[in-house]
Image 1: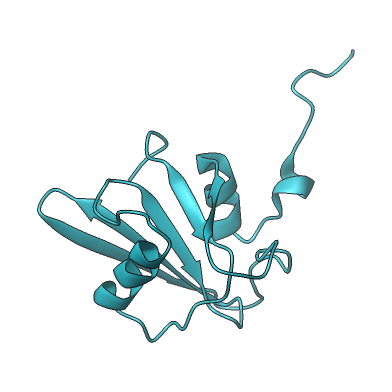
Image 2 (image 1 turned 180 degrees about the vertical axis):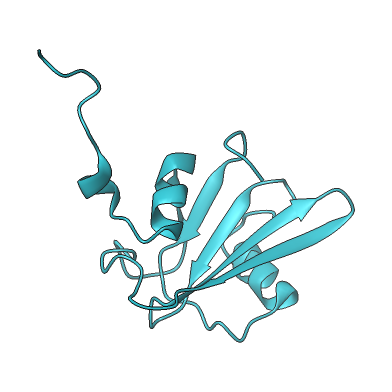
Length: 112
């Protein structure tokens, strides 16, 4: 998994008891193919746990992150409903570190 993969995130809270079969079923339910190499992100209702589903050579890989303290950004679910939304690699990295992308953006150039 890297910045060359398309990254999509579930727009709704996900039951974190789900394993590979149920997560891939969630992807298929909205007409996407979980084995196409895209990275699928799921976050639980408590916003403390994240699972990432990704197809690699010969099988699925599930990455699991549980925050030691705090929660993922409160606006992680922009819209209620079923489906996925695209995000950039840099947004995923910030999200996993618990940093709001809006706070972390800086101007590219500073005037002297």
